[in-house]
Image (cartoon, rainbow, N blue to C red):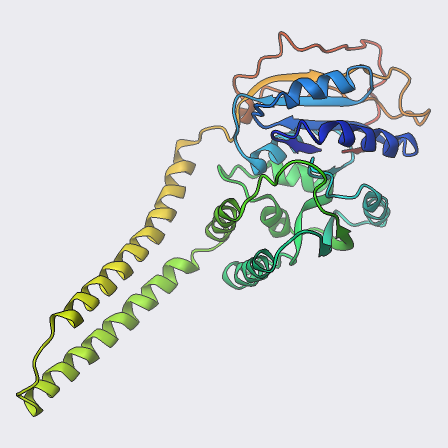
Length: 353
């Protein structure tokens, strides 16, 4: 399952790697790609490169809804026993999937990739990432592993449980960790991006981190209250000190600079706390509106292999259900789907990318 946003430069190599990987692994029966409102023709390129290949399914959004909703849309279309989530930038090595599948067959439901080394990451990114996971575990109580992204294998049980969650701003890796199940990590070295630019600059990573924190904990609100009490106590102590100083040293001249400093300080503290409260109120507002997390423009399916998956009896991938609340507005009338009425659909697919 691959979310795609303006990855036209990477798609040819991505499809080539997936095909080479699938050639020796017949248990991978479907490849789901989600076009997250790309403006560089990524969706059309995916169709051109996969139209004559079996098992490809494309979901196209009406606009850019974000990486996390794109993963959610892809998982909603999975019909296999397990699915692997990976990025389209070729930084998630497919060879790691073999280890993930082996652990899944041993009974693990969530097999996540742990980035042992990340080529091309600077010191600031590494430190910011380390601090985020430290704060996330401390604030939320969710034991989310460090240096872990969305590259992971999820069993059918985890996918079904995740789809029962209906948060408007999903933080996928946090929600999957929160679900529990049997989890284990696989270490790997993350290579440098081959083409294009990262779609997650520091500013976007910061927003994702703040979403993750506020999605799982109300501790920032409690800390704001504690900080407010502390500031009030310090202010009272400062007032007492100013009165005592004036009584003991009448010649002391009061300065306006200190008043300006105090005014700005308390004004900043108040704005900070109002911002924290406003963030939680905004999240409540989003949840109450109950808008869909994404809107599907169209779905498209490549040629279906009517012979099953290498004689294993596994069915070829079928189209996603587009009747759910998260897929309102889906246009499937113009989809270039080549369906096979007599295809064997008695057994579920074994695996999906």
